[in-house]
Length: 358
Image (tube, rainbow, N blue to C red; front, side, top):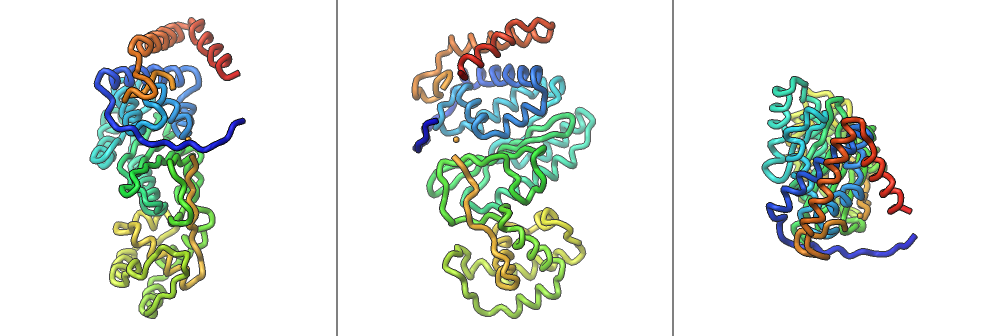
């Protein structure tokens, strides 16, 4: 197996309307075929794999370093399943920017339309976003949040953050079936263009388990916590910390702790549910937990690194519409025949895949 380093500069530009229409059609066909052949759980598993997701983007018309792959692929999937979600039992909510913030409203509308309870998904959506923005402080601000879920209650989430300084992006993948704890190494994968060396705070790491438990105990024992806060006058920080004394705002911490007076924090997820618990508060709490209990959090970066129809911006070559349309037609015919019990085309596609993989 060959190994090496790939430098992936982003190419600008947007997918033209004619290409996006085809992306919607092709993604719809691919999703239908996967659900038909393997089931809804397999579809979620594949979307939660950063490499498979990247490959899907390439097939749809984005070369491997095109900007906008994540948001456009998710947008195409959402549009493709807008009218067929009920039939397939798969639904997509969320998106980029303000659309991501409207995820709870979209869930409510789906619940009213199809008659299922969406409160669990709304809670999951909020917590997953808060984990990647608050517990995993890697310098990437979330601007994209898409949740895909099934009528059985299975789910996957694809989120993306941007480092405005470096202009690098990273993508966070979640698969509900693999999540044991939302706050401890919950990701199915993190796709990044750059892995940082010890400049982040990762409270999702197993190495941060003692730190999280110390924070929970401190917040539950409010009298002890407030007493310890009053006793802190000078901070002696080890050089490895990127946390600064300014992060320890005693007034803000005091106000946050007061908010928890009537709440019993049974798990760290309950800590995240407290309004006002954001990145700065988590950094301060982690620092206090280390000062009082010696419980050190993790500063290791958990991220790891990731052509068919061409690229939207003409690299490595322009998307060839006739070939794209032939692919669409082939998949649609295969799906139609498979639904009628005629599986010759589906089996032919499978054989082709085996040949290409050998």
